[in-house]
Length: 187
Image (cartoon, rainbow, N blue to C red):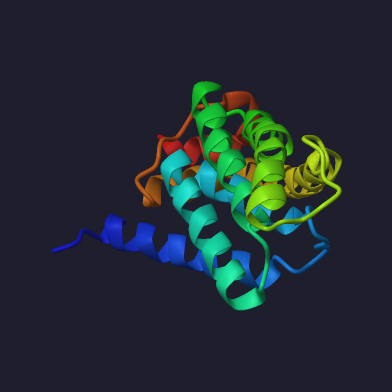
C-alpha cells in the first residue's frame, strides 16, 4: 500500500505535468518555451532532480504527441530540468542555483544537442551548432525569472518548506530567507 507522501508526490507530479502541457504555448515560439522552464525549476525545488527529469520528459512526450511540437520539446527541457535540481541540492537550497542549472542545462547543453537532432533526424536545414542557443537562453531567463519570483514568495511565507516536507523532499534551513513566522512553524 502506498503511503500518504507517495500518493501526494505522484499527485503533485501529475499536476505539474498537466500544468506544463497547458501553459507551454504561452510565449512559445520554436526554440523558446519559457513556461516549461518555470515548471522545470518548480519541480526541481519541490521534488528534486529525478522527478524534474521525469516531469520534463513526460511533458515533452505529450507535447510532441498531441501538439505536433518537434523534438525540441525534449532537448530543450530534460537537461535543464535535471541540472536545476542538482544545482539546487548542491547549493543547499539556493533558488538562484536552481535557475542557473536550468540556464546551463537547457540554454547551453540542450541547445547544442538540439542541432544534430533537428538537422539530421528532422532534416531541418540552415542550422548551426549554436543556432538555438540565443532562443534557449532567452527562454530559460524568462521562465527562470518567473520561477525565482514565485519560489522566493513561497519561501518568504514559509510555504516552500511546508510543500517540500509534505512531498518528502529535502528542505534547507536558509534562515536569512525565511520569515520569522515561518521559522516558528519549523520548530
